[in-house]
Image (cartoon, rainbow, N blue to C red; front, side, top):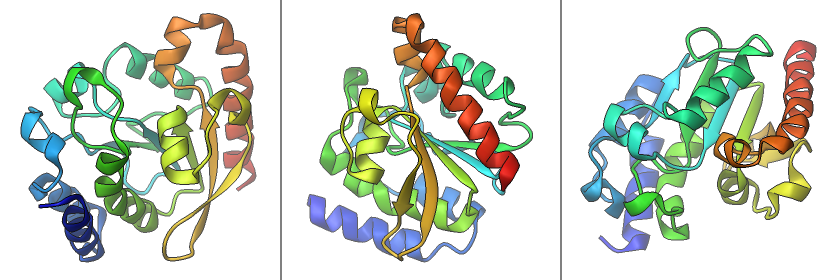
Length: 204
């Protein structure tokens, strides 16, 4: 299908889902995203479906594509440690996903078209799980869901993430853990962001 047709198919499939389990199945069955055909696995979500915290990253990498779960490589291990520092974990009270569910070739950034095809599923995930807080890990999900560029300038600032339905959710852009592995001196700012996240979750 063309890009427009693929987006329309995704919207139809996502809208038909009344639960997290139905959405998981719909993403697994979706074949209209061109990335699907070069990937080993669909990488949709990992964690607790009704968690108050939803973390959204960019796209699966090699480890994620191999295992079929988001954030399982070195960056994922760092994310787990960051969450643990504020009493959060994917096994107890956090849900983790991405803006794209199949690995882009060579771990390149997903294209705007690929993001738009997956977006109806991303928005439906948010609408169904209704998190108290959404963490946008890195510039790609921030740009995709907030329309904002410049993670260095925007990280740590709470924003309203508005769905097509008009629903609004509190979103916090942070550095992607892979960036922190490359530039560990930025972990000080990342810790400030985690403290802000902990305060938001506690106040709610």
